Image 1 (cartoon, rainbow, N blue to C red):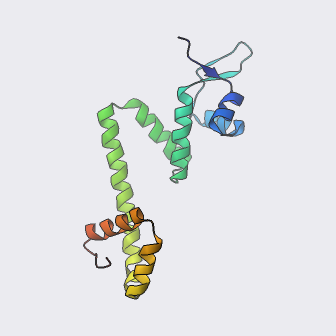
Image 2: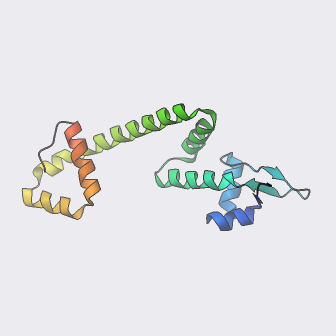
Image 3: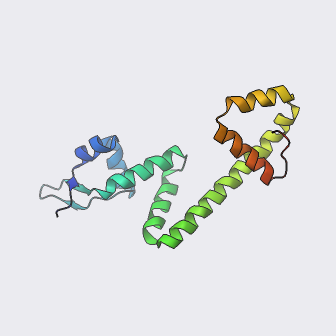
Length: 145
């Protein structure tokens, strides 16, 4: 079975990422072509689509391109067990950041009337409210729900 290779335009169309951005990611080393044609066109492997998806997910999560590059190189160098450990570590760091943000909101929430707090929670998605409550419990500051 021959692996499918994509020129930059095809990769752009399939991934919904501009050719210019793909070119930029290539120059930064976030992705790399599998090989080049005789006319020096870059050809990208199917795995590049998965990598582009991961890059876009991380960008939406507000990672910088340098952080993304570091994470991607780490992911390709580690075993599955190490990947799980690294991912759990990332989650722990994210939770610490969320905990800090909840602590910053605490004085504002305490000044609110119970009716305002209830209205705030009913406007949130249930998952978001549950996450906030869990973080408040973790910080031993829960008295809202």
